[in-house]
Length: 185
Image (cartoon, rainbow, N blue to C red; front, side):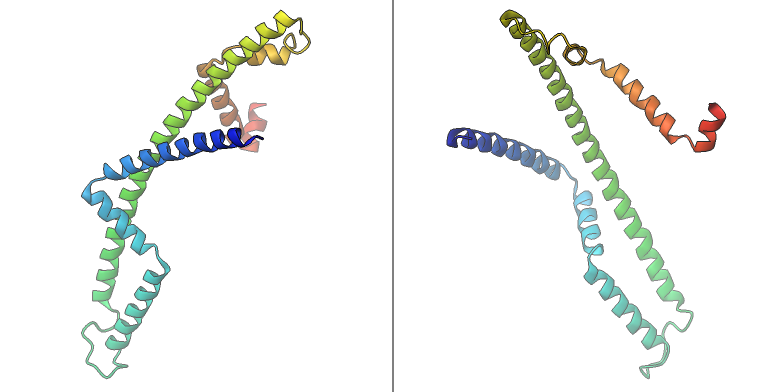
């Protein structure tokens, strides 16, 4: 590979990386203040240090309320107040996690849609390239590959609707249990 083709390839890769970074930055800027707060809370809650802090706090709470420290308990066993605090924390943390997951799912759906559009465009471009290649080969009298069944199949335009239906049928067949397959067959 020549230096200029390596430079060109790295320039194309760099452009692609910058384009993806711009898309991610745009998505990050479009988040609401509540979404940013939820993401931050989930990030903090997901750290190992948060688990350690909780364990230490619970141990101190239990020690103070069992009389071990010589202090009169303010939340004696069965620690009703602690249970309420932990339950509320779990409820709110769950809601923040769900909100973050919902936003991330929307982002993933957008990326998947973009992926699909790029893949469809690439499929159309490759079909055109194969058709052009067939014309060049025919002009040069090279017919062995271009007349093969495989080449002809690949050079035809892909019917995305038909392909999606085929994939759906294959997935439905694979999801059936062995007993359902035996009963159907």
